[in-house]
Length: 292
Image (cartoon, rainbow, N blue to C red; front, side, top):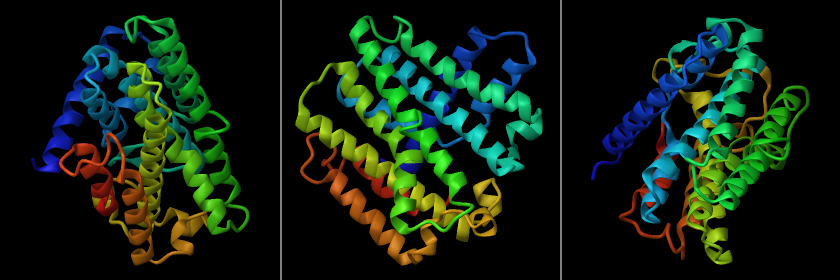
């Protein structure tokens, strides 16, 4: 199995699912158009992929895990809209950012609404018939996307534009801003399958955390050495704004070694993540060399 064509195919399938859901829930307003633009503006759909592939291993129902995957991607999309506003970026995935396509106020509201829509989806019985499972999904996503997670990391990202951040500060920001949501992606299928094994839960948490740390470290690297045409967004923003970027403390080679170490730890002696033939194993090592 060639990995990239498989990833691309899964992304197409997810996009079709997301668009079908959005069309069914279409609302005649400018705000809805901005929301739809924010979620539909391309993307690798890596977070949904982690949820989908792990859910398949656990033999979960497709309708259940696709709804959780969509809710997670809505949270991610909301964070990107707000990230672009905070950085005043013009381009995202080769297209105008949401606040440039519409306006800043509408983009802020669109991001907020994507976030609330995510929890609306998780609260629906269609996501899972058991109240306790839905409550657990909501509780975890709330914790990992709020001030102790994603939003907290965004706040640190802003803070480190104004003062020099240590390597420890930057990795902590990476963990909050990016790794926490990936942690949810790895743990959500276990919640849906009602697996209460502490050892397996810790393994899933480590996989998601390390996956996110790798993803953000490579994102920092792409910002410095990436090609704007390939990435579909502006590069070298961190250097221009003196943002907290891991490249300040590690060379390109050092970052690669750091990422390989994280991937190795995430997949060693793990019940579900050690099989070298599995997509989840291949994926965490594959993202180390990503260029977009």
